[in-house]
Length: 360
Length: 255
Image (tube, rainbow over all chains, first blue to last red; front, side, top):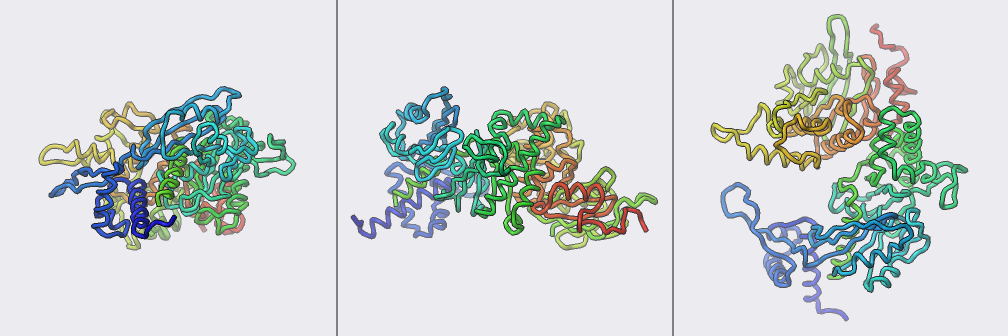
């Protein structure tokens, strides 16, 4: 049913104002007026309205040290809208309840016993939590809530969103871990200027996620670890030969990257050689991904941070040899600032984006 | 260009240490300076920092020719150098070290609160989470933390070009990573960084451009995006790689 135009406009403005505060933090009414390009009185009415509904509060800002009364800041109330985010890993579940404005209100981690089904465990840890949206991040190839392939979890064609809904009785969104982390770094990290951001995630197996202007894309979930870098090479768990995961023995590095880089740093020739080969393989796979997607920033996340910073020379050399110059000349290669928290933060941001979308 | 060196030459008596060196560094980029021992890296840094006078060529900052005749001149132009020995005072705490010699005053006394706040802001703008207590003496910090303090000290003074001489040489693997990320962040915040290192992994991890010195001459300046490790190694060891580098007629000897 179509709403009267004035009511609909008001809804849109409410959503826009909350989104502005959520993304950019507390600010003055004047700043809001400018950012949203709305009338002063409109902002005033919206703020009063949203204050009554408990979504925002006006606080006295920090004194700037200059003369005059400190200006009043409008801030959102974290508890008024919350999103539950869960990151599923092979051996553990990580949970965060994130409030409006990005504050982490609750945070927990629980180990998964071998053989336990993560979906049931998710139902247990999110059981008593009320939230406006729930998002799960899964390491693997994810499309529209279904997990087509996850090396880390050993899942093939599992409709995770539907199973989570059946287990918990509420709607779930499912994103892949790399994409979630990319959203997190774009919105709450240092990568907000990237138009096309590619996040490489090192878990038990490598995945990648591409976001455009901070938004997850259909088809942006990439199975980095199953790009063949050595045709006819080692056999991989997926059935192919010469996959990046198999060639760099990614499972071993996932558990032992610290030991491997330490040994290489102390001059262990075998460890050095292994890291160099892993770096070259990563560079070649990256060449293929960048040629296909053309990002302007790449983040090396999970244990790939350690690998990249220790083997940047072979990674970039192999990458330069497998990519067109115009694709790499302006490309920024960076490590993420949110570290391990990126995926949870990004999963929550995905939930907030959906909440704001529904409010419109 | 923030800093532009043209035809820079430096002699110690009869020995020509730098010969006709060109190098330009722009704001927002990390330029790595590589070269074998004795290639002239440290001399080049000392010429820019005002420790050594130059015998030929020109130094321009923001396109304007400048004479740098002492460290004060360099500092006034926004050029700060972090040397390998860091030059920190072990008996002073983090804040005192950051402001050493340039303390903030309020009337006759030191303005400790303002200094501590500014120190905290600087460290948080660099996303430094490894130093929790700003009032602990520097003697109690690890090598990586000390390096961080030395770099933060260079950044605190509205500096525009930070020169880092082998900042990771004495560090462990994990600390090296943190310092590399810090170097990258400096440039991403708009500073120019001249980064000297022997470790090519460290160089490739942060550099936008790689300048290779060979026996006092600039063999080549490459975009890091186009460079390969073997090219850089060849430039360091022989001064040329394929069509890059010094011409075949120069073997480093002066004609």
